[in-house]
Image 1 (cartoon, helix red, strand yellow):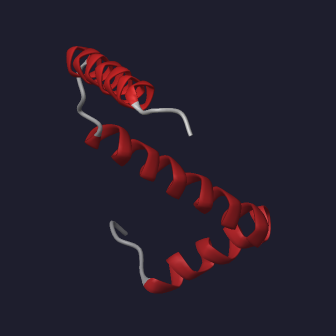
Image 2 (image 1 turned 180 degrees about the vertical axis):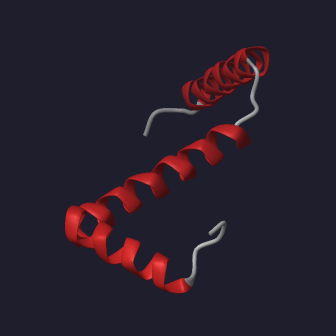
Length: 76
């Protein structure tokens, strides 16, 4: 009585397919997969605001240096 046999799980699967249909289940699976991917991506993005500020300052300095180099070139 404590555990389900394979036949119990098969009946549950058939009932779920009949109630929800394959399109809804496929869409729910796709949504769940995208949510998990987004969560994993968010967990791997460990950049703190301080690091972002440093990076944006470095990017601004690099753009300014690049602009200066182009301004130093003689016109064509």
